Image 1 (cartoon, helix red, strand yellow):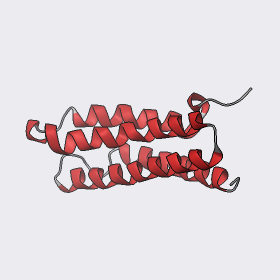
Image 2 (cartoon, one colour; image 1 turned 30 degrees about the vertical axis):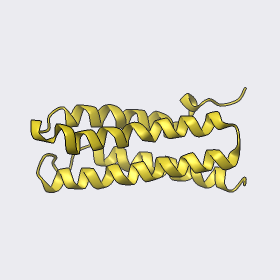
Image 3 (cartoon, helix red, strand yellow; image 1 turned 90 degrees about the vertical axis):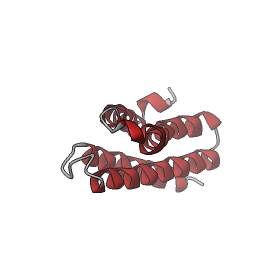
Length: 118
């Protein structure tokens, strides 16, 4: 049986990250609603969405392309979390930083594996 995106560890961890970001940004100041909150939610939703789209494309080359997009969105989110930390919306020891690292590690591993098949 072929793996679906829902069985991939990187997708599962990215979905957990989505939940964390939505919970975190719900506590942000109202004036951030259309700026940092919106940017973070869009970036985090892009990660598992691009993993899923890459799987669905059916070609390894396209899969790797969409994994690259997911990695870019993760880097964008990481920067936005650093901004949040700098603005003191988030403590430096928040568990989301571990979740970012876990997701990044799994996504990088999946990318390397798939890129080696091209």
